[in-house]
Image (cartoon, rainbow over all chains, first blue to last red; front, top):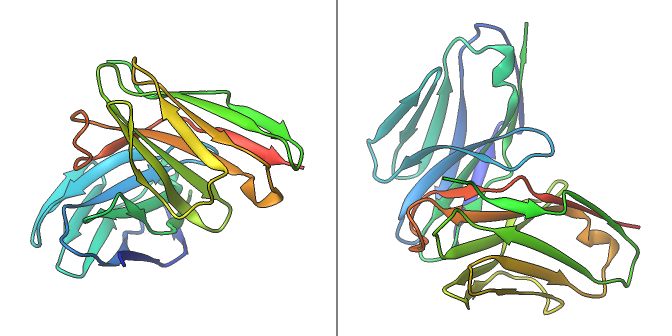
Length: 108
Length: 115
């Protein structure tokens, strides 16, 4: 059974304090690993897709990396507007399986 | 291109009632995915429709059902509502159109509250 575990559950950072979010997964035949950002009460917003170990993607202050067992979302010099829940999902031989997310708060 | 749209934005129902939620995928795209996001449980896959057919179903009871219309819009029906059905219901559409093996783009969701 495909599984995704995200850690930490919640993270509080000062503005400018860089950190990383973790997504550990087990999947039969990885087709893709996806990162989303979700603001309260809204639908998830697509950030990145990673397909194979060693791949990296960047967007503004975010950088996603992938190994055979986990993915990291690195946040460099975060700003208060980066506060959100970040979701990780994997697609194998079944539709997307999501982790429960990491709730990020960035304090000015 | 227009994104995924959902209606209504909010619904309040009582136990035992029935509800219908609606979704239109990205214009020209044939697939629609439904997810439930209940508090503390994360997003759970409900149903996948493509070209008018149900392609896959998550681990939910039969009172969760749906259909897809010829214009690729979709309805999710929930019968005999229970308190634990209170959740944000999200609809998604694959970005490249129908294969199911690419990133999915989500609508704004319908917040269902069951009293």
